[in-house]
Structures are given as C-alpha cells and as structure tokens.
Length: 101
Image (cartoon, rainbow, N blue to C red):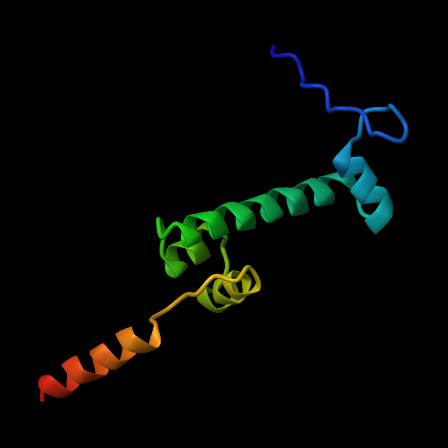
C-alpha cells in the first residue's frame, strides 16, 4: 500500500490543507461532490492545454469532457483560445467552394 502524500501545511495555520474538505464546508456540499468538481475542473484545464497546443480538436475535447462542442468553445474563449477557422482560412474555404461549381 502506498503512503499517502502529505499536503503542505497552510501558511497561516501550519496544518495540512484538505482542499475537498475546505471546499465542502465553503460550498455546503459533501466531500464526494467537491472531489468530482475538482477533478472535472482539472480535466477542463487539461483539455484546454491540449487545445492550445493543437493536440486535440474541439470535438475531441467535448468527447473527453462529456460535454458539447458549444460549451468547449465557450470554455476556450474564456481562456483566450481561438477555435475554428481564422477569417483568412474562412475566405480561402469560400474561394475553394466557389471553384467547385
């Protein structure tokens, strides 16, 4: 059985900080709910990093987060990430489509 890592003490109390317990008290939620929320927030952050590095698509991020493409685009925008085509890419696509007629 592996030893549990000790969380560093809080600077003001010298006692270890339990993020789940602290958030549970603050949000008046049970510890399990808070842990799920923290894990999902971490997953959102990780998916955002992968999007920023262009290692995954918006649709793949939505799949990983069990969310919609629209919500992932909103999250990306909140983080200052551009998703979709640039105006230049859009114009090129329009020109290509016109050439197919």
